[in-house]
Amino acid sequence: MASDADDFRPLEMLAARLRERIRTEGPLSVAAFMGEALFDPMAGFYATKDPLGAANDFITAPEISQMFGELLGLWTAEVWGQMGAPAPVQLIELGPGTGRMMSDMLRAGRAMPGFLEACDVTLVEASPALKMVQGETLSRAPVPVRWAKQLEAAAKGPCVIVSNEFLDCLPIRQAVRVDGRWRERVVGLDPENPARFAFGLGPVLSEADIETLPDALRTASDGTLVELRPGDGPLVEAVAARLHAAPGYALFIDYGSDSPEFGDTLQAICKHEKIDPLDQPGGADLTAWAAFDRLGALAREAGLDVYGAPGQGAFLTGLGIEQRAAALARTVGEAGRGRLMRQLERLTGADEMGDLFKVMAFASPGLSPPPGLDRLKG
Ligand code: SAH
Image 1 (cartoon, rainbow, N blue to C red):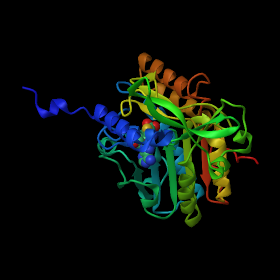
Image 2 (cartoon, helix red, strand yellow; image 1 turned 135 degrees about the horizontal axis):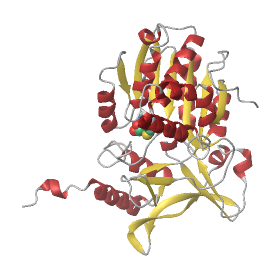
Image 3 (cartoon, rainbow, N blue to C red; image 1 turned 30 degrees about the vertical axis):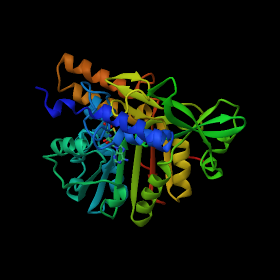
Image 4 (cartoon, rainbow, N blue to C red; image 1 turned 135 degrees about the vertical axis):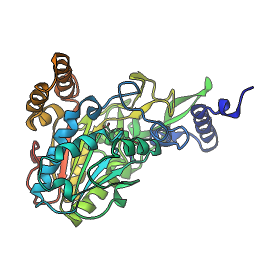
C-alpha cells in the first residue's frame, strides 16, 4: 500500500504553487522565480539539499582542491596583519556551501602566529540543509563557529569577509528593449501548454531601475537583453556599513564580467548539465554572471577602497598556488601528482576557471592593498 510519503513530491508541488501564483497574481519577475527556485523552504535547490561536489550537481573551486581555501586562508591572515592584527577579528563567509573552503582556510591560517586565536567565524547561510553540512565539516574547527542568516546579524568589529560563488546566486532581473523602451522580462505560463513556464514581456522599467544600469547599457537596439542585479546594492551597503564602523576587508570571487555587457547569462545546472532555466524550479542551480564593474562602482560610491578584478588564475598564481602545488606534490605518489596538476589547471587555466572567474576586494579607506590585487583605477 502506498504511504503518504510516496506522494510527497516537493518539486512538483513547487511548480504547482508557482503556476497558481502566476494565474492569480500574473507573471513573476525573473528574480522572484529565481528566489523561489533556490530558496523555497520545501523544494528550493539550496534550501533542501547539498548540491555541491562531483557526485551532485555542480562543483566549485574549494571542492576542486584544498589549495583554493588554503591560499585564501593565507590571504586572510595577511590582511588581518595589515589591519594591525586586531583581536577578536570576525572572519565571515557569505554562502559557505559545504564548509570546505573555511575548513581549508583555518588549517592554513595556523601559519600566522596569533591569527586563529583572534578569529571568531560566522557563516552567513540561508539554507538549513547546507548549514547542517557546514556544521559537520567544521565540527572540529579550532575556532568558535556561529551562523547568521544575514551579514547584518554577524558580530560587530574588525572583520574579514570572504565569499566564493555567492554573487552568482543573488536573484537577477532581466529587461528586453522593445520599441525603444526597456520592458521587464517575466515568467508566465506557456499559452500552448499551461503546465510549462515561459518567458514573456512585462511592464516598462521605471526610471529608477534604468538608473541602476551603467550609462553604456541604458540605450540599445530593439531585442537587446540586459540584466539588473537588485541584490548587489543592499549587499554593498551592508559591507560598507561594517567597513566604515571598524577596519576590514571583503573578498568576492565569482564568475562574471568586469565591463558593462548586454545579454542573457541566466543558467540552470542540474547534475553537471545545462538545462532550460524554467524547466525544473528547485531541481537545478539557477545562477547569473556577477557584474564586477557595477559592484566596484557601488562600493566606491559607498566610500570603500576597491581592488581588482583580475582573473582567478592570475590571482591564485600571484598568491603562490604553483609553489603550493609543488610542495604538496612532494608528499604524494605519481597518481596524486597528476591529480594536483589537474586541479591546478582547473583553477587557473585560461580555458577553465582562470579567466571567467574574477576576484574583487573592498577595504576600509586607507588600509594597505590586499595581496594579489591592485587598486581599481577610475
Ligand atoms: N561558497 C561555496 C558554495 C557556493 S553555492 C563554494 O564555493 O563551494 C552558494 C552558497 O550561497 C550556498 O551555500 C547557498 O545556500 C548560499 N546562499 C545563496 N544565497 C544566499 C543568501 N541570500 N544568503 C545566504 N546564503 C546564500
